[in-house]
Amino acid sequence: MTSLDFALIGHPESWRAAADVLAFLRGPELTPLPDDEVRDILPWIPPRTVCHVDAGSPIAGATARGLYIDSFIPPDRLEAANLRENIARVRAAAASAIHSGAKIVSLGGFSSILIEGNFDQLPERRDTVFTTGNTLTVAFIVQGIRKMCALEGRNLRNETLLIVGATGDVGSGCARCLAPLVKRVLICARNVERLRRLAAELQADGVQVEVATDVEQFSAEAGIVICAASMASPALLLGGLAPHAIVCDAGYPKNLSPGADMPGARVFFGGLGQITGGLRFAPDLRGILNRHPFPNVVHGCLLEGIALALEGRFEPFSQGRGSITPERVAEIESIAARHGIYLAPLYNAQGPVEAGRESGRLACSRRGVSPGGGSCQQQG
Ligand SMILES: NC(=O)c1ccc[n+]([C@@H]2O[C@H](COP(=O)([O-])OP(=O)(O)OC[C@H]3O[C@@H](n4cnc5c(N)ncnc54)[C@H](OP(=O)(O)O)[C@@H]3O)[C@@H](O)[C@H]2O)c1
Image (cartoon, rainbow, N blue to C red):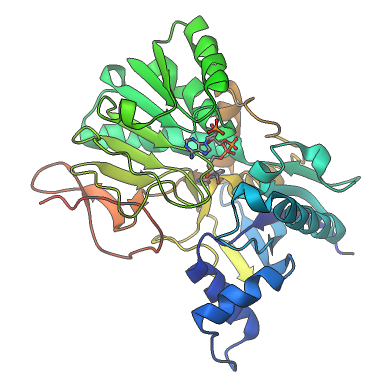
């Protein structure tokens, strides 16, 4: 067994992403499978290592060696109905990471949601630790909101913030970081008891909070929206959104429906970071695994494991549900920055999000279009 610094556990965000990985694994000599065959085959593929990943720290000069392990949960089987089967896949992927000798493992996307952040559900291990990676995800969501507000000339102090999926690990972390900075917070999820508990926690710190289980009740009032719900598919419509609302879709898979009608909204995909020291994949799955319009962009949950490995801090930095605090977010931010890991350039389904020259407002250009859900109205 070779000792490795880190392992990253993920799952395909879409059928297109799954088909591309399968085509790569089958090799160039075989014609890619038609879409219906990919859908038939994927549920039979067990979790497995897809490639080696090396990361470098341009500032500290450190390097870390790792693996990407795909649990191959089919994109249409993330619903609760498939919970047992999906937990078995996460456990098998985790066992593979432990067996490979990885010192720290990041549980990407639904991998940590399925086990409800409870690491006791993972196989026995001695020298391997796990992290959900959600603290660095929260850091990048908050940084993204701040950057978008600065680009738009908006003052957070005057804004009403709506968080969909607010009682989750990511959502509650965002609430704790941003609530003290905004005028008012609207929190939304399905379970009203959990919403009330979070509201009471925020109110105790003097925050003005309202709760709702129906997002439509709030959408017209929010100037800033964070979508961090663990939705199995992009189905969120956000009807009646205020014109010029800033919307951060941090879901994996995305929360926002591609059919969401949000005239004038500034949408960006949140929770993403960029590793300036670069990632090397062997075999070279660049652009297949990380499907973003910019190089070396990775989800915060996976980057957290890489940052901790580069730092030599092999500890379960993010664990459990609902324990992310502004102090921990600041700590992981500075660890990441020490290794050249920063907020990724902002983009959405239409491409990079940048300041429009004529209006001074944000526009969505069509360069380097990335697959996936979400919606952004083009500015003139
Ligand atoms: N961008 C990144 O790098 C990154 C990193 C990590 C995670 N993520 C994504 O972030 C999202 C949240 O992750 P998490 O770990 O915070 O999950 P979590 O702890 O399971 O929390 C999920 C939250 O969503 C709510 N929710 C679920 N379904 C909903 C629905 N249909 N409508 C409204 N609220 C709903 C849940 O509350 P109720 O059950 O009461 O509704 C809860 O508040 C997931 O999509 C995950 O994949 C992204």
